[in-house]
Image 1: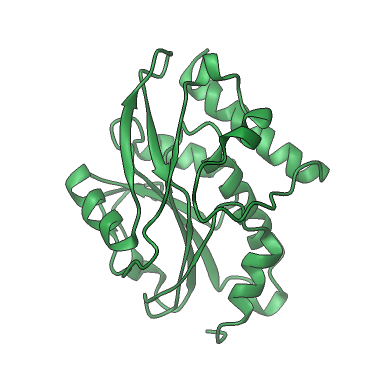
Image 2 (image 1 turned 90 degrees about the vertical axis):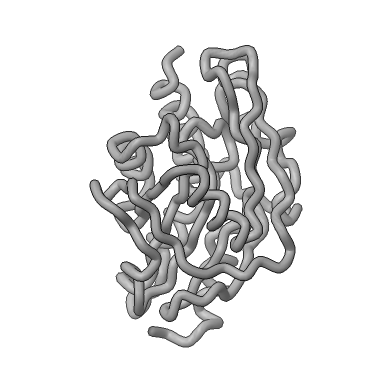
Length: 221
């Protein structure tokens, strides 16, 4: 099975299950392993390779994000969203479970924002797999979710500096599968405010209503 088919299958499974109301994550594991539950909604492990979820830093600083490759066909900066709130997630497009499910949940939250919040919130998917996630691939991937979600990546020296400030951990692990390697990574969602400041770190599995409520607790831009 090709890599594109693998992540398309995982993405479609996440979206269909959410739309059908058959799966609504309740885990509050602060970014720790969630594979046992996710494997029921993703391609078989023999096809997709194993993948571990790492624990994120509990006290990240946040800060600027500037990356040269994006779904916008050019550089992307967190400054591009000045005046808006941003939900940020770090992952990779070949991720079999956490990434498509988190982006599906983020998409649900974006679609359910109150009318006076529409257009004031964006999503940003930062890929930590630049070797495989070029601009076109990132654009196709986030295109499966929501038009208000962008994606970006860059060289590992840039990614690791940004990841360090956001308390994100990731590492490549070789596997015996068509993928060749997987990327073990932490799985938190970060809320950044209109001035670029990091406001909250949400645990893996946070539901759309909880994402929205945490947002509504902030001043409207």
